[in-house]
Image 1: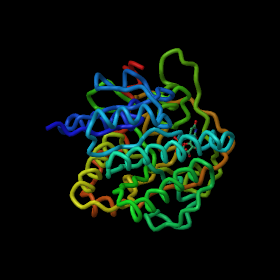
Image 2: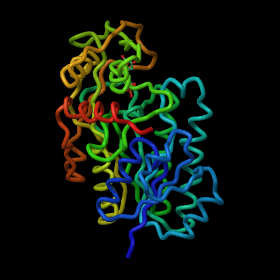
Image 3: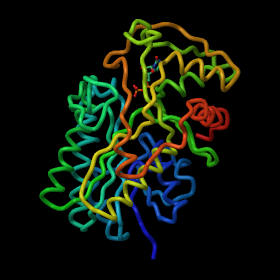
Length: 327
Ligand code: UDP
């Protein structure tokens, strides 16, 4: 019997890699994406239904047609800066649409959700590395919208028996090592793809380092970069944990290792043999100096350990994608 799972936002970056990993493991992912951020090509031949998670009628049709064993909810807006300028977009997409999806799930008796959350729910670190018990005090509407959705999941678990996995991502990076999918945002804001784009012949681009006066060893911000294929694997382990035990849990997904902006630039040089042209700029609003996770709970609960522990290997897959990208 086919094991259907719904993947909202499955034509986006992390969603497409998870859909691919699900298919590799014998599940039948049905991708549901409004293509506002996603790409048809990222579905990579898998079944794609174009639609919005705010569209109850369309979701009803889909849930009638397929007996979903679980829902992966990736569809969301995820840019910190944009969320400050346009919070309505974030509360509408990340909270209101999520409530809609959850109502449909409950109506159809679908009990398992794997929810994309973020380290932005923690806000500024009060201790490092950040474990799951770290206070959650988001400093922007993106983090707030995700934290509100987390609260909803916990309350629905208590009241309606909904099983949930809250996965708090740190910095997703890299691309699938063999399939033609990778990171492709219409408006790119992330460090690694921006650094790589400066190296494409004739781009004429430069990378601006946002702040060199942070209280870190080299003055630039430190982040915890995790490969997107590792994230995808963790999602499947999370789903299987819900199948086995039900209930609910929240875990960080990260490597537990931090790299500064300057270290990333050096690593890009090491991998590509090319020097990233850089400018030094002002700090970007809302950037904490250091975000590094404690990742032992995911290991303990899910048996998850990232395969990509070397930042060079992560950047190598991102570079392969950048030079061969199809969308
Ligand atoms: N960054 C930078 N220049 C850029 C983009 C990002 O210096 O053009 C820095 C940013 O300030 C942060 C780190 O790189 O410290 C990672 O930023 P990114 O946007 O990739 O991810 P975020 O941590 O914001 O989710």
